[in-house]
Image (tube, rainbow, N blue to C red; front, side):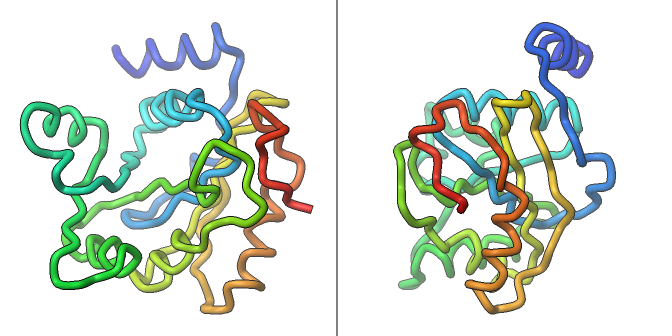
Length: 184
């Protein structure tokens, strides 16, 4: 019932499409979500998750998962991050993958909804250290499409791999293009 409602709203009322999710068969990955310029990206992600049936997660500091809102964040796909043991954030998140049979972590490499001239590399090193693939996901407001690329494992050469990943986002238009990371 809920999936039918999501489809009706997303496809019929909003006029969006989802492209490329049908062959996605991985239990652990990092979703590289670009561009991220608006809060609208959040509900597009929720609709995509609800329609495809692919669980998608996010990481938050463990204190967020305490009473009274902890149940809500877990229900929304949140996973608590425990940074004890002097682990940096990338190492702590990569280690989190060991605790779950299924973890598909959505990360926006821009790190903010404001314009940035450089992407944060944490998404890449999390995937590399956790030995999971990166799956580029684009919210294209110009074409009203959520596009999901095939999984690619990072090779350890950040610069070369980033060039490969960014090709997927070349013609994507953000909700607010003036805030969008410049791919070219």
